Amino acid sequence: MAGKDYYKILGVKREATEQEIKQAYRKLARKLHPDVNPGDKTSEAKFKEVNEAYEVLSDKDKRQKYDTYGDQWQHADQFARTAGQQNPFWQSGESREFQFEDGDFTSIFSNLFGGGRTSRSSRTRTRENLDADLPIEVTLEEAYMGTRRVISLEGNTRCVTCQGTGSIRNVPCSVCRGTGVLPNIKKIEVTIPPGVTDGSRIRVAGKGRQNGPGTAGDLYLVVSVKPHSLYERKGDDLYVDVSVPLVVAVLGGETQVPTPKGKLALKIPPETQNGMTFRLTGQGMPRLGDTHRGDILARLKVVLPTDLSSEEKRLFEQLEKIRGKNK
Image (cartoon, rainbow, N blue to C red; front, side, top):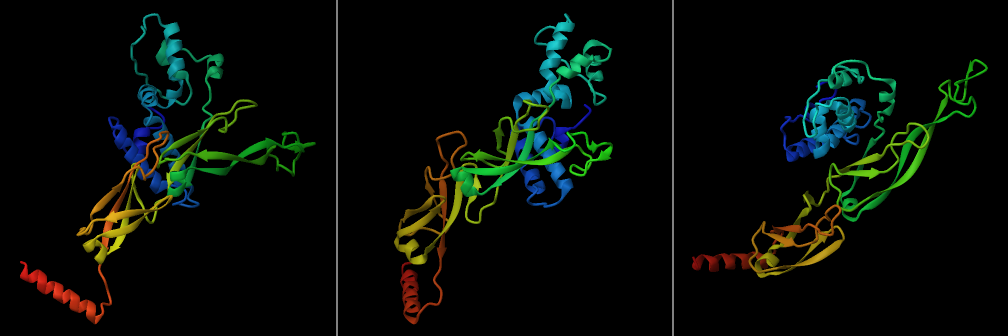
């Protein structure tokens, strides 16, 4: 299979499971993210390749087409239709593999029809992939509540001074510097829904690359969630450490558990051990596209007292004697 090897890009075997592909993508996305490697064009290019590979291999239908047609998988349906029309012996339901040796479609149609060059009309019917990926980083709070962002998209418009020719009376246009186009920055507002995770892809219809008036692909926002100083996220659940004084752990009482939308009271039973975990049902992350939520799991960290007074030390000594007699 010529062209890009998406399995090799993600560093997984061809028989890798969906979970293995997802784990490999997350690891590479964190390593290559532009925010982690500011100004590193090599990392940025690899990050785009990784996202492209994950977009295909994480989708069951796209992956099946890729395994058969290689990096020309986007034209699979067209190949199948054309082959069915041209070859009466290729019955519906048959599977067939093709080898691609160059970048144009000559070898593809040679495999399909046994030779001959692709007609110009066949090539023009092939739709160019105009979709584009844009990495976007959000905080855990934004992933919890959802948010809106204004993003800038770079494009080009025809230079009105030279009408896109690049020159005026055979002299290079000083406005566009002979390019015929001018940079164009367009701002759009996008919605980040609650529950997004690392690798979530948000489709913004019609905001991808353009190929003439009225023809545009879609923009896909590839989400990366920033690590949080307080919470550890596992799926839709949030883990948080909660400190409680020794007296509360021994005698029981109440403590406050932080959540992304405020603090909640948690009742601590007497003789609670250090490290015990309490589950706050339905207080975790929302599930993307669902009404259900994960849980918050509060891990108790018992705080021992310091700077004891003489009276406090005497009471602990007394406790030690009492506990010793009861053994």
